[in-house]
Amino acid sequence: MNPTFANPTPARSVLFVCLGNICRSPLAEGVFRSVLEASGRAANVDIDSAGTNGYHTGEAPDPRSIAVARRHGIDIAGQRCRQLTAEDFDRFDLVLGMDQINMTAIERRRPQSSSALTGLFHQVALGAAVQIPDPYYGGETDFENVYRMVLAASKGLLSRF
Ligand code: 4NP
Image (cartoon, rainbow, N blue to C red; front, side, top):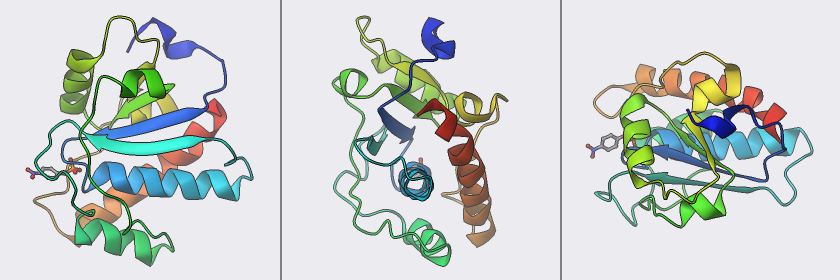
């Protein structure tokens, strides 16, 4: 968390960050976009996702993330994996990590000059410092659990926009 955590200025952009950018953050990008559109406030909001590592750069999201999104009426198949960059801290008002490991990597990469608000997605959205667990070595239930957590946090995040 940083000093701008409680800044009430409405955000215009958000970057969701996880480790690989193939499981959790693509789902967060797709679900938040869907929630924002349903609220009628999606115009001119910049939404993206990135990974702290570059192992899967250029790849589509994990098929299990695509599947869970599709089961809930959201298409994330067109997304492509990319790595978090220093420029992201200028482009985005909010840079939100899924877990504490992501947050450590985010803070390490954050330029001193950046005024982006960084924090755990769930905490910035809903107040409690809950981590969204990595489902990569799990199964369908784990991906459904990530979906449910991301949906709840996305609804909470609406109040920032
Ligand atoms: P994500 O999950 O951070 O939610 O995208 C992972 C994806 C890939 C790996 C680990 C976690 N990996 O080790 O390749």
